[in-house]
Length: 342
Image (cartoon, rainbow, N blue to C red; front, side, top):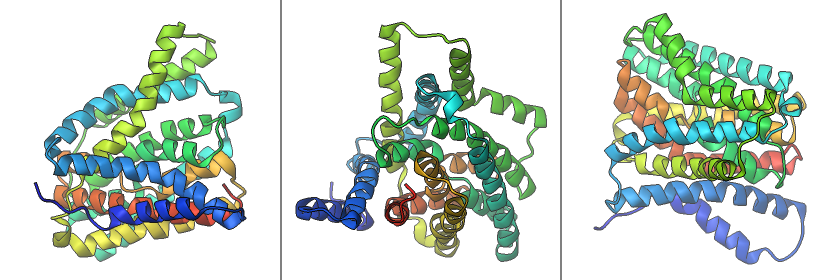
């Protein structure tokens, strides 16, 4: 089979190899460059591998949805549980960080809604565009990015707690948005039940119970849980690569360009700038980088499809932002690493 990978898949890899070969001496700027590149390169390479596997025919796009569902049901809750299980929750719980993240998501959602209502007339596209702007791929990119940017041994409990609070808010706002803008109506009780059944919420509750009751898993089970947790992020990134389909992008180029600029440049610029001014540093800032600078969530496509939104536009938004996300996240990480925030 003859195929061609998009040029954007090679940009970071080229710079990564070049910088690794030429890195001989010190210098904070170059050291920061290497740290940020080493943080983003694994994410980029795994996504590219998933795309390559689909282009070679080893995985089909419809397989991605099926495996993605299994991964969210079995791998993600185990990953969330394990990271809470091994974290110091008392030290990780940060009211200021949680308030900033939750209020930030609400602010981005509200502003996006006001702008999109004035720039797009079709309701079924309005809801999709709003969701694509405020709803990031935090669950897939957030934790591995923070782990790569921060030193080994750092406590990532605040990232997990942030995941467990931000993701339900994403889901609630998505339902409200898609109901309001041409979507299918959903029973409010059904919404509450769906949130409580969310695998991430289940993993969070079980992890907190283990912490509060000071329960420990038998060593064999603990090792198995750790292995599943470690496999979750690479699997999700691989599936993200398998989801890519670049051929349809030109049909929605104007709307997709608007989403890319907003999701990857404007929103992280504003929110991360505010976070820096408010004094967030280290793992806390790295968690916000994953929340506000990552691509549009894959789940936004599935929800748009189920609730009457423009599923094609939703898919194109995921593809475009995911394709460019490695480059923009690297740039944001480099900027804030250079000024000493991360």
